[in-house]
Image (cartoon, rainbow over the protein chains, first blue to last red):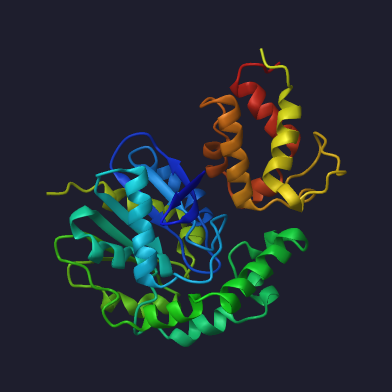
Amino acid sequence: MDLTVRGHRFNVHRAGVAGPPVVMLHGAVVGNLMTWLCGVAPALSGSHRLLLLDARSHGLSQRCAQGHDVAEQARDVWAIAEAVFPGEAVALVGHSFGAVVALAAGRAEPQRTLAVAAVEPPLPPTDPGALERFLRQDPEQLRASLPAGGLLGAGRRVRRFAEHVRFLLEDTDLPLALERGLADPDAGALPVGIPLLGMFGDASPCLVAAGSLPPHAKIVVLPGGHFLPVEQAGAVAAELVRFLGEPRG
Amino acid sequence: MREETSFATVQRIIRQVLGDAFGAGVEITLETSFWRDLEIESIELVTLGEALQLEYGEAVDFVTWLSGQDLTAMTELKVGDLVRFIDEAVGQGG
């Protein structure tokens, strides 16, 4: 469904009718709320109220040229959370750049943050060039390197995917936001009072970022690469159910 | 009693969701594949499911069904499968 906050229209999806609220954030450029919908959300929706959202200019949310930096996207997250769960604290779950946004949102509003789960955050010292090289591939190569990318086929979906990538990389401030956001040495910080889960793939270039999370973070390493929520949906869901279900004092 | 059949409703909502990307003259049959023939994106299936829930109410929860599927299952989905899903959910099956 559409939700307009901060003058911007976002595509969001809700699942689950009871339990603490959880906001789920996807990664940049190749992500959208489908990252979490199939595989992970069903396991969580029995015990949590989930809010899956398409970040600005992603999925079916409104496109815009500006406002893709980490701080601005963290403000988007809180505005959307407030619209859907007014006055409630929420847990934040993010994948890739969405994990970096989740950490920033937690720092910005610690009193409203129940917990943060950061799945594959590309924090320093992750090689920023790896992301740049990945995203700047020919769209066809980029598609082929995604999990299940071959299922996109060869027609309308591929054309839309290529146009979406071109728009984000050439017509928006997202590349600069990624460059700055992922180089920030404090991007992994989170107040000690907020429970933190870091989840990484053992074959991912982001695994080196595990050491950049604060000492109170619980680190889980699963078999797989960067796209863990898709590659290892069942295992990721099980870890999230365990972490988000832990009693909070 | 609804005047529109579930098939007609699905046809109407597919056109609504796909919008300008969908040719007015394209025929949608029960055998039409969402993935191969309509070239629908997975996230558009979510929008389609939400529109169906608005139309029929909570009983037609296609998105929850969808979220339990893997991508391969999505690629095999036909319009007729969705019509059957709706009919069973609202008790018009058989």
